[in-house]
Amino acid sequence: MAPLRLVLGALCAAAAAAAAARCSGQTPAWTAVTAPGVQHKVLLNDLAGPRGIVIDSEGNLLVVEQGGKGVRRVVLDDGEGLDVCVTESSQLVDDSSLSHGIALSSDGKTLFASSPTDVYAYAYDAAKGTAGAGRNIITGMDQGGHFTRSLLVPRHNPNLLLVSRGSEGNIDADTTDVGSARSQIRTFKIDALLGDGGEAVQYASGAVLGWGLRNSVGVAEDPTTGYIWSVENSIDDMTRSGRDIHNTNPGEELNFHGLPNDTSSAVYGRNYGYPACVAIWDSDVVEGYAGGAATGKQMVGDQMPSNFTDASCGEAVAPYVTLSAHLAPLDMEFQDDGSAAYISMHGSWNRQPPNGYRLSRLSFAAGFPVHERSSQDAEERIMWNADDAACPGGCFRPVGLALGGGGKRLYMTSDATGELTAITGFRAPGTEHQATMKVQAAC
Ligand SMILES: *[C@@H]1O[C@H](CO)[C@@H](O)[C@H](O)[C@H]1NC(C)=O
Ligand SMILES: *[C@@H]1O[C@H](CO)[C@@H](O)[C@H](O)[C@H]1NC(C)=O
Image (cartoon, rainbow, N blue to C red):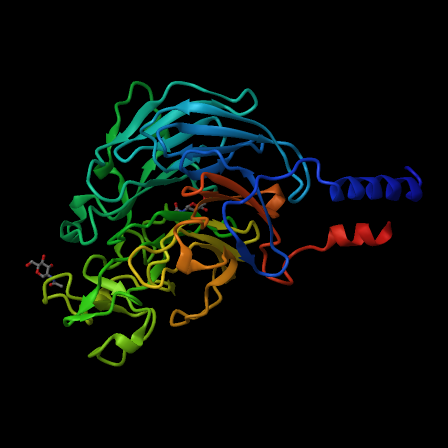
């Protein structure tokens, strides 16, 4: 065993090297404000509309570039914290139709990516950085309006591929019929999708995990429970009994889907309300609600026929957490110990002043959000633009999130600015280990 003095010497040298950054980041296109302890560094700023991100089995980042490119592979060195450097950035998949969704199989050898109409699978070699030809495995999602088809392979259910598809336009009345196969999350068995000689299956043939979900772009698994959660982008231009309430209603929703293989759970295959029923954020402007309007309860508006009522909305699954109106949550990623979910808020177009354009956190305990369903305080901000009123110009607009670096580094894409940013110090105070500070104190 080496003398303690030598071990400490090596650790101190490492700490000193870390203090002198080995590569500088790119200059951000925005001015950020952060919670205490949060630091960020723009790793790349030349991406074409970067959207979804995953981390491969070798720690490389795979990023969908919506701007007519495909999938980019970004190789990083093994630096600590924010002192991380890009060593290679190259195009992995050349397919201009890819628009948002990306996922890896549990063995890391199959890459899934989506266009607005289809899902493709590619044989992937993480060490060599090569991908085979795309094979069409799911089809039949042609529509106008929302174009993302978010993908997730849960760690607890590695034979399932979850595909989230939004509505055609703001109010898609046909989605009251589950057969519309829009505004839904469906699951597919991966071994069947990849089986020999198979043709692409129709999206409508997947098992319905949840429906009545207007546009649930963010879909994530809590790795400690296997539960699936989604964040829903709710309706625009809302009126109720002729009154315009859209500036502060409805709220965006965090919805709970249980285990994606548990067909007997209370939420499996259930309807979540859209298009008739949406969540109250600002109860002050919701009149005539029996029993009293409150944040998190579901209400009707003028967007659907009057036979839908506040009372009938009680049959739909209510959100666990309601967020303020028009934040546009696009991705969600859980802390590895289940203590928080991080959410990217792309930001509003349908309210004044603008709102969103930030990275936030929801605290979880024992598998569920710590805040009450009626709370307006669940969202804890991590990093935001200095002046939302100036957005979207000159602001970062978060899209994809991935947690890496042993749970200590978040990667975030911003499509509007073409940036890939690394963020540290995002955990709630008191939940992060203080090991590095002890080492520094010994030097
Ligand atoms: C669902 O998957 C989990 C995790 O693999 C497993 O423990 C559980 O038994 C499965 N439940 C059902 C109903 O198949
Ligand atoms: C309202 O009527 C439409 C058809 O007119 C029907 O599809 C829908 O299910 C009805 N809603 C309720 C809550 O009864």
